[in-house]
Amino acid sequence: MRSPAISEDLKQKILLIHDRLCSEYGCPIPFFHDLDPLSELVSALLSHRTRNADSARAFKQLTSRFPDWSAVRDASTQEIQTAIAPCTWPEQKAPRIQQILRLISERHNGELSLDFLAELPVTQARAWLESLPGVGPKTSAAVLLFSRLRRPALPVDSHHHRVAVRLDLIPTNTAVGPAHALLEAQLPLDWNAQQVYDNHEVLMLHGQRCCYYRNPACDRCPVLDLCPFGQARAQ
Image (cartoon, rainbow, N blue to C red; front, side, top):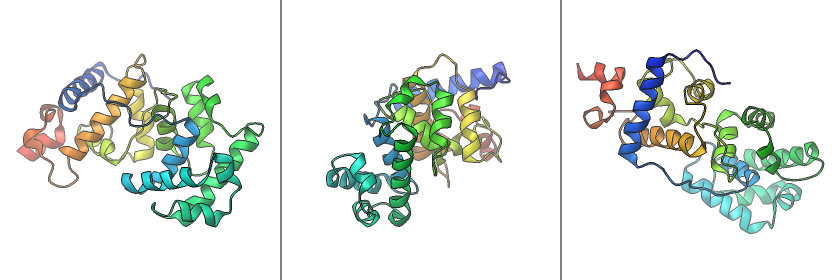
């Protein structure tokens, strides 16, 4: 939920960080997927704790082997596990994916689709997704934002989270899960999906290319003057 208790100083800082990082990394950033929301959900589930290249290969093998998601739902679990072998823990993800596909069918009058989420407010759509086993705030946001639904929901990955903590946008002891609500609440209410996507992408890219977990390159950081962590390192 969005919180009204955000100071004007923090709002201005967030916009300044966003604008500088957008200048650094080139906004608007093209969306990397144009999948329907159910396909995006399966893709996100495969990506958990998996390198992007490996999860992409698993998704491609799965969709090449089976004609549609009902066939994946109804196949033997061993067949699914074999198809998604490139990702981590296929023996856990195969039954979970099938369980989720069955639940979606049961809850949506037998229809295996998530297109109906387009008609729900973002908060309700996220709550519906997060009622599925293994679906947390990052996955629900990814389904709504990255899929062709293009809804303004903010995913937070480990890079995004690290940069936000160092910039003092969220408290140091905030875990990634709770960080979703806090960071999304800080964004302007009228931002569209592209702007929310850009915000996620530039913070993530900054974590990957400059604000490293170890030995961050603070000397070339475009937001160093706004970063308490970087300022402390420079002393």
